[in-house]
Length: 242
Image (tube, rainbow, N blue to C red; front, side):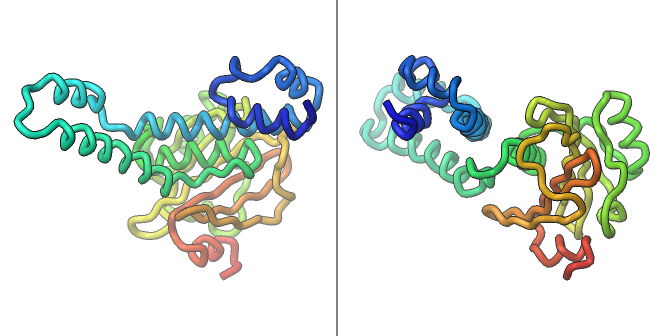
């Protein structure tokens, strides 16, 4: 088995690692680059699977079984396709909305996944406040990072809430701002010591994925991701670039 064959096999079994051959698993353990790719790919697939699972309507399985057990008031061929189509529509909707890409660094993929869940109400915030300093105190009390400084007018946006998360195996924080009426911007801050794929110092990199616009940068020992569904010009204006 060569490296590419191992990669293809591992790619097909990220959510079922026991199905991968011992040879492919051994190659991932001995090849640092292949091992790093597998870790990132597995994290991405798990995030997508979690998002799909969370978006399936509660009781869908029970509803399907209940309809199967009911006396047929109309042909069964109408019932199961209708329910299956409803489930498929939910999954398709998340496929269209889910912005995380397997090509992103692990820290960025995990940050954007958490931000997306907060944006769409799949993950609750820990504290709500219009006082940035109050939110920082809450985060510090729970040993979560807070921004030492922020560029441009990022820190001048009205603040809404915060959330403690884990990114690439380390504590991270989300601070939610109102970037414009009806639109939020979510700032992720994480310590970048040994962080793979960290963006350059004080040079924001802009990226678009699905309906999300993002800016990522590092400042000293901290790395940031600012993500929003507002348009790119609004985002860049915070950095004095629009």
